[in-house]
Length: 543
Ligand SMILES: O=P(O)(O)OC[C@H]1O[C@H](O)[C@H](O)[C@@H](O)[C@@H]1O
Image 1 (cartoon, rainbow, N blue to C red):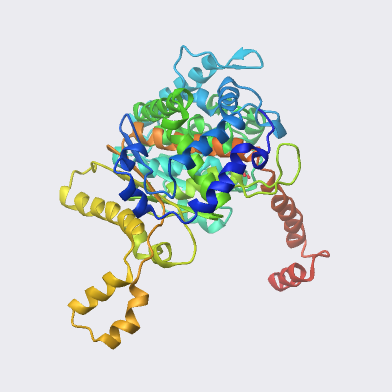
Image 2: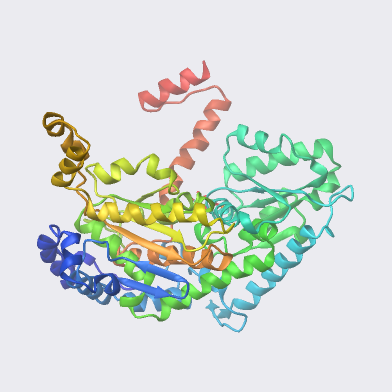
């Protein structure tokens, strides 16, 4: 991939100049001036309707942003990404989660070898295993079918599977799936408290098989299990997903029970691999395949659609526009679906671990902003929590609203109410409410002139707050696959523009290292020298 400082491009300079007028754009005026605006800033693709007309942009903004993609050679970067080039330079790895959703006839090479046959072998293993557990032919050590699954993993080995199984709860079968991630012992003990070892299957997921949390939780659970079950039952009840097969075997998991994954799948993009085993167990392999199929459709859209009509590219460019020109620090993702309640948490890892970097591809500190802070909660709940700040606070928070045309239980009454809120909020954020309107409303309620004078300023909404609406036909495994892949590619585009490496995560290492040392001190009751704050707290903790 090319190594281009985005701020040195002509497009960036043009964007800076253009920003001098664009920062004062009033979207309401833009809509008035251009009756075609809602059509021009809208992409309809398959079952997705993406409206980005309620953003502080005009055609000129869009054209400079598109020139930026040319100058940073985005098209070449996309080709390198899909072709298996080692674009994760600092770890020397390809980034090929997209290969996991390819068809069986695809040919994607890593080190000269086509990886697709291996991907399909593992998929077959996931299929056979999950079908046998679901239909009860694979049984526990006392001959009873499994009723409960515990996924033990953290980060990408937890957030992806948990977000998808929660999102697809409607499609779930009879198996109860639990997730244990935190090294907090209260998490694991609470999770297993009411479980029956005879009917519980444990899926230990760790790409590296060196993660403290996962190995501790797996050991604790194995000890709990073998207190009740004979040692040889471990083989029937514990399976592992990892790229470190040797270490898994050392842990005592049977080689038959290991689902491999590969270096070329990043942890936070791994739900499409065997890391998704708990998904396949929970909703069945057919639904897992539909999820992959949806993601593949988005891959093809991203790879083949001109950037003007390309959903991940347009969303990434908008985010760069707000992040680097308006200096917005965060973005909200508001799904109008309770099923998607873990999507913002999942995206926090995907986006912030990928693009939270301050060194460019030359190893030099960047002198511009990179990764955005992502946060969010489902609507309508979030309206009653933090929307006050989005409407009337001092910060600019571009927000993505995700909604569905149809609900799953087909309760029209509820769905109409939900979606009325979805539409109303983006309209309110756009339109705002001026002082004259507020005063007229108060007058109509017979509020005294004096009171109106006091109250009116608090009731004014400045409006002009940017939102992007993603309206999808229905929440299905396939549409969910498309949505998640959309965000994966948005991340990629931003990383290319910011000239950073999106696929490493060195920033998580230091804390881990220090924790290892501090744990020794805690266990030995012997506090070493630290900064005085840490030292004093450690002594207090041990007292
Ligand atoms: O799957 P594992 O190797 O156990 O890794 C689990 C997680 O831990 C690491 O600290 C990384 O920050 C994450 O990207 C990763 O997903």
